[in-house]
Structure formats: C-alpha cells, structure tokens
Image 1 (tube, helix red, strand yellow):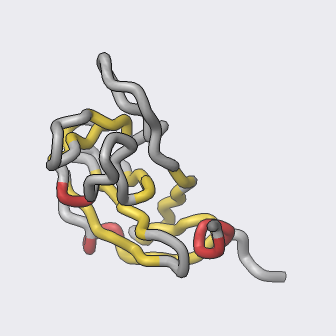
Image 2 (cartoon, one colour):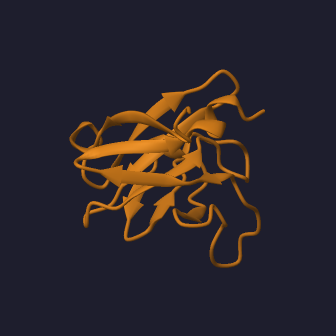
Image 3 (cartoon, one colour):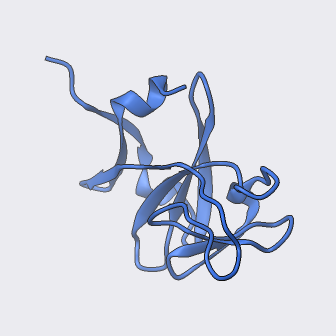
Length: 109
C-alpha cells in the first residue's frame, strides 16, 4: 500500500522565518518555517496579483507578499485585515526532522 505522504525535505533545509519552494507538475508550493519550527504549505501565489509568496517576509504565522504587502495567514491561506482573498493551503506533517506533504498535492491541478 502506497503512503498518503511524500517526504519533501529535511526541516533544516528551510530557513527559520523563511521559505523553500517545491515544484509539482501543476504548481509551485511554498514551504514556510516559522521561528518556532512550525511548517506550513501554501500555493506560491498571492491571491491579489499572483505575487511569489516565497519571496515574502515570514512573521508569526503569516507571510507578507513582496509585491503589494498583503498579509496572508500561513494556516489558512486567507488574506488578513481589510484585504480579501485566499491562496490554497496544503496539509504538512513533520516526522523526525523531515517535512512531508500529502501525496495528492503532487497531482493536484
């Protein structure tokens, strides 16, 4: 039986308060690591003008888009404050220092 999770990378390959991009067949997924070693996965595009969230500033459980300063929740992908919009978020699992994504994410359209 095939595992529902795919190992993506060691957590140490994602900078603290930073990001690493994973490419699938259909999209780029930004893996964000907070100062407290939490990891979140979002589609690498801001809901405003498709800016590269991976190049944004990570703070608390949020990322600020580098293009127009929209603040996006790492937990839900929702824009915060007065801004409205959402980018896709994906389940992440950490196990023994390694980051895993759901296998279905790799084939998601």
